[in-house]
Amino acid sequence: MGDDIPSAPREPGEDRRADEEVFRQIAGNINQVLWNRSVHDRRVRYVNDAYARVWQRSPDALLEDSGDWLGAVHPEDRSRVEACYAKLDESEFEVTYRIVRDDGETRWIRDRGFAIRDESGRVTSFAGVAEDITALRRNEDALRDAARVLQEIAIRDPLTDLINRRGLERALAQEAARVRRSGARLAALLVDCDDFKTANDQFGHAFGDAVLQEVSRRLTRALRPTDVLARVGGDEFIALLPDTRIAEAFRVAERVRDAVAAHPVEAGTSRFDATVSIGVSDVAVDAATTKELLTQLQLALKRGKRGGKNRVATALSAVEGSSQDALLLEGKGLRVVAQSIRALSDDRPVGMELLSRGPSGDELENPEHLFRAAVERDLLRSVDLSCVENCLDAVEARPDLEGRIHVNLYPSTLESVDLDRWVELFCGRFGSRRQFCVELSEQQVIGQPGRLRERVAELQKVGVLVALDDVGFGRSSLEALIVLEPDVIKVDRAFVTGCASDPAKRHWLDRLVRVVDGLSAYLIAEGIESRSDLEAVRDAGVQFGQGFFWDRPHELADVN
Image (cartoon, rainbow, N blue to C red; front, side, top):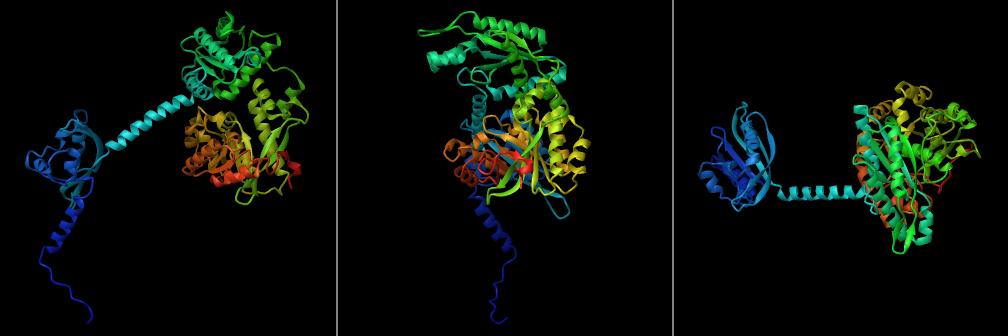
């Protein structure tokens, strides 16, 4: 105790004066406006020096005159701000408003206020912090303007200025929602330019571009103002026809066909007799995705071209009898193949994706042909369900398999089958012995993610993970990523294969990783085919991968 240095005695009130002096020094050197108002007349009793910098008015004048703090508030905002201050003794507030300074400049202010109470809870004064956020608001406005421009660019085909496939997905979702609300009809046309490759090869790509531009103009003029036209491929266009039955759609298609063939396309000394073949179909809005719509229309187009070009045809609605029908109806001959999923940190297998194939050597061995045939015959749900059941049968027969099992599912199947059925398939048969992940293609989800949210959440609740597959910039829906809250996000192979040597792909991949970091989801990169791509994907921060670098899809019986 003898070594302690005694403190000098302080006069009463000295501590408070010291604290006030420190406060004033701090308040005088910050950019926010600190204010204090009387509890009796609500006049301003204190503001710091920042008031002069922001309001361009003297703090002394504010304190000495009527204390009209709100005198500079923009007339359109004043009543809203006054309402906030009037309730200060009841609750805190945060309000954003504009002020018009004496020099005529408008500034944006974010103001936060609260009541100061004593130990008994009685309000003794009001205080707050006002901040000039003009620069922030201007930046936000600029970003919104830029986002609108980029969004418009992203859905436009630069050659024809029509909407592209992504724009069609949005338009299809809007029209499908309208049809569900009103009960109206929706039809569509697939327009294919006949012999377009001949024009390209004979006259060059510049002339081919001119043909596409002229055909798009003729299509636009022949369609109705309410119709939606998109370029979806090299020489393919899709038109959505709202409030249109199939018979009327057929007449519109004939008018379009006649308009294109009315006279040759000429550019310089080159001349081309342009004609189009058109497929016509109703749009099944319960499963309205661009991929399924395109499949329906391609069937109609294929039928039409059997009789020659420059024709209009509709899709068959009846099931044609064939051996393929029995396979599709009963699931006979469907095979299960597997591809490993690897941890990129050490190439260790952590699971596998199970995929469905038709009989070896059959046309339906290709999964694209298999599911297209199912859509054409209106059997997608039953075929999709058979594929899932076959995959789970194969898993049950192989108790030695390790890691998480991924199976693919169409969103329309997930939505239309009762939850109890899914719980029995994934949980009833396996209990907690297996971890399953259902993969939904992002391209099939786009447009209606909200409709799937409840079913996805139900699966996650019983322990089944959900993956969003085929995610890629240029067609991705941020809404689907946010609304569905998937556990796993799979990057489309188009943005993975070759990314080591393609700076644009690598840039997109880096951006996607940053987005996913905020979604609490795992990333799996599909299409890793080389050591250099593996290293690039791993360096980008992706945790898992699939690809030919490790293995190709192979019979499940061959899995070690």
